[in-house]
Image (cartoon, rainbow, N blue to C red; front, side):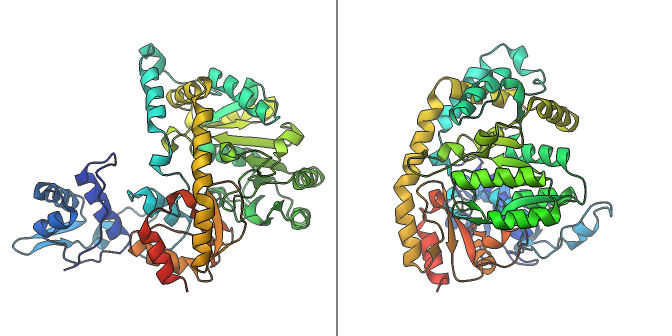
Length: 473
């Protein structure tokens, strides 16, 4: 009999039955529970997880109904053979291979698992207890008291106007002049990147990204048929000599860059590098897409030098992206594009043709939080908490033989050198219920790497430290 490790939380939003069903199904999908393996008895499972037997009975029954388990009278519950079910899928659909290759899709899928946040140091978001759920809930309650008809219609083409007016004030603080008609609301920065890429590229075109960089872009751009090339990221921005060399060779249409609190290194762009990047874009005729989703975690230039290219260019050759998924709630999916008036109209039209409007309810919630002054205090608290753990976690990692490439004074990530293959390290960690983020996924070439991204807000579980101490030698 196989007795797997499960993580059941009484504080999460899901019921205990749902958590058990999802945990077992995920382990079967990832081949951590093999076909034919016998599940713990109902009594044993209930005792080990400290839940009622009725809860386990219902969970097992649901797993049988979903085709994950089979019940053998008098013998118990066993993992069901799923090959026959997969083979029954029509040939028009792409079947996921049995071997779970460690790639971008793998990491994204596992980031949505119902693991406790402290067991996910590879996650790209803050744990729930670092955010302010009551702040978002108050916003939702206020919206629910509005005239109900306001909640039933589509939003407007470019997004909720009062929020765009509020964003005009926010961007002015960064010395970026953008009228409301230059701002297009999106479903997070993810949709913003997709809209811009579709507007400017055709299959076969080249897009530049930082190397390392946010991994989700690589798969998204590949689906469009574009070629993704990485520009080495240094402590103060990209390698501008390499940028100019590759731009002359490949003639890119776009360069996607984090100027402030780069993911995954938490470095920021110096004024000199910002000017050089803009100069290269003008010389080689490509657009710069400045992803500034971590902007509100930055403490200001007195602590860490940081220059936004959009402030130099004023939205002529630079398209500026922002959002609130990292600081308020990922589930709000409120992002935005700031660009020239002409391009804003084209992008809004493209958004309408693909997804109609964005959700005005979420935009109204964000507007309420921003306009009433609560947001500034909230992000101040986040920065203080990050500052309170950064140095200690850096020291502990280095004591365990890891090296932090850039000791930055801000941000939620550390880019670390482990001295071992982090793909293998990640696979071992997942077997024990921990999610890591291997360095291979942050490079367009996806080659094996000894680097790893650490989310300093998700390093409170002693088991994570015990695992790293045991595995990194």
